[in-house]
Image (cartoon, rainbow, N blue to C red; front, side):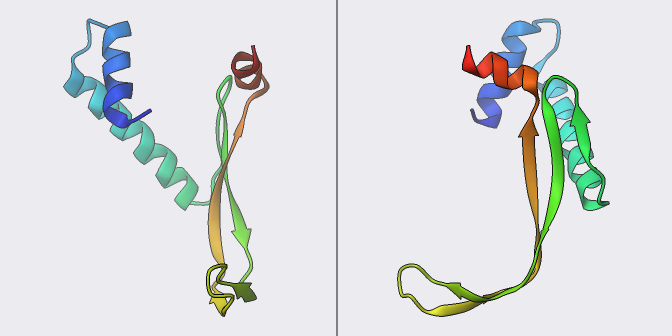
Length: 93
C-alpha cells in the first residue's frame, strides 16, 4: 500500500480528520521510529510488531550474482520488523 492510499484509507475511517493532519501524523510516526532506531533503540507497538536493528559484519567474499565477481560489502545495520502474534493471526485468518 502506498503512502497516499494509506492516508486515503485513514481519511475514510476517520472523516473528522483532514488529509493534512493525517500526513503530519504519518510523518511524525515514521520520524519517531527512524530516530529511535538510529539511536539504537528497539520500537515495539503491541498488537503490531517490533522494529529492531541487526548489525551485519563486513563481507570480503560476497559475489555479484550476475557477473560472479567478488565484491566487498562493508559492515552495516539492517532494520528488521517482527510482526506480533496478533498481527500474524489476523493475516492468516
